[in-house]
Length: 323
Image 1 (cartoon, rainbow, N blue to C red):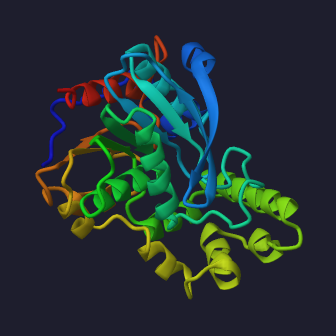
Image 2: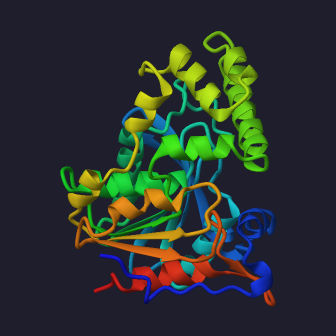
């Protein structure tokens, strides 16, 4: 169903520009003293893949929340810390997962990260659920993490995740092809993402110099060209388009949902085209789509005073799932 009535983000008029929302939210350091003080680093063996995470456990927690960051992000990203701190303060146990080759974990696995690698994240989610096997599990992901969260919820309909209760996807990447094209046409975001992706290629090559040579990927001028080189040299797919199709979120996948999912998008998102979200509306009674007029890409910040709206919105959504 489509429902934005219970979620309403209306920032100060000075903070409504989508680039302000997107850029400032990543620059303003989120304070998460209690979450970080309680965090215990754990390396999960997810079906033979080693994935790093940080577990902040609470006694008598109503549920465990697995937080999934975006592409080229990490478990200490501002939006992850802001949401995680608020959830922890409200009594939840919080697990912040780093995807393969994210958060400086390039040396943990010889194989390289690809966004289609759902199996290892699904295996990690099962292990996180087992940390508190008698409690509900919530999934919360942003951007590419939102894409993973939606695909995990879709797979749950065929292969259940223990105690999965509610999935929240924030500004999820629905169609990676359109997202990549939008990045490549942005003079603001293309240099940022290209620089970060080149850096992760260098880090992976440094960790496994006898295995990798990413000179062609690093030299490519756009994210699309980098992806084409990556698939040609390292991927199992013939081209970028086929790769993108293997981790796109489709209406058919969302129609199969068997657990509640909330998708929060911003109409002014400069990275994820909001038009990609429209085909998902109404495909399942389990899916609630909330499109906010403002928010940028995983921004949703306000000023005077500064606040992360998501830090309030996500716990409120999960509270609805509690028995």
